[in-house]
Length: 202
Image 1 (spheres, rainbow, N blue to C red):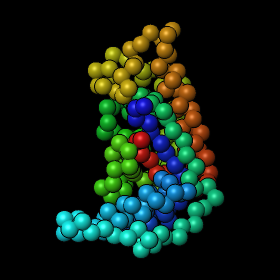
Image 2 (image 1 turned 90 degrees about the vertical axis):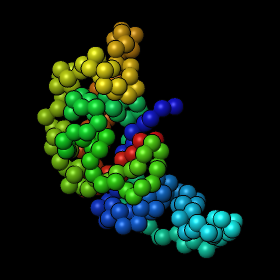
Image 3 (image 1 turned 90 degrees about the horizontal axis):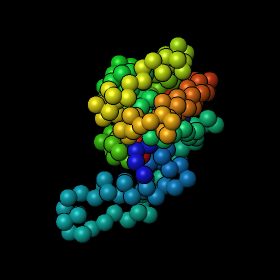
Image 4 (image 1 turned 120 degrees about the vertical axis):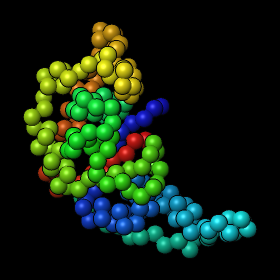
């Protein structure tokens, strides 16, 4: 299936909450199913000797925090497998880059040491998202086309390493541009709603 980049809206208040208690992230990744949260809390509370003796924490004893999601929270967008190509077009880098355009691969605050797919999740505040939105205003299709370099993208192993395909058979540049437009609109809406972002690879 491969790696897919996902961004979902989250309030600044809840960003603070999950940075203080990273296991809460499971309630935001699966707001309609608390079983993942319960299981991860159970694992965290089962110490070395308890595991050695085969003792388990009763799932029913774990209290699930009550979270009131705001109207514009948990809206999401995914960039399919175009995410790394878009990152390259924005930054001309393989992974590390300067903010605010580095947010697809790095930047923001890491949420604990919790694997949520391919690596850990990160959060960006509403101020971070505003900065991304401002940077996006000067980026159009022509700008992205000028930065498209299939040879360099293949050399730097930009996922999913399809960039040198014949454009008539597989237009990989248009693929990136299509998903960039989706992302740009999503970022603009997120700013309008004064939300931050929770981002991760799944």
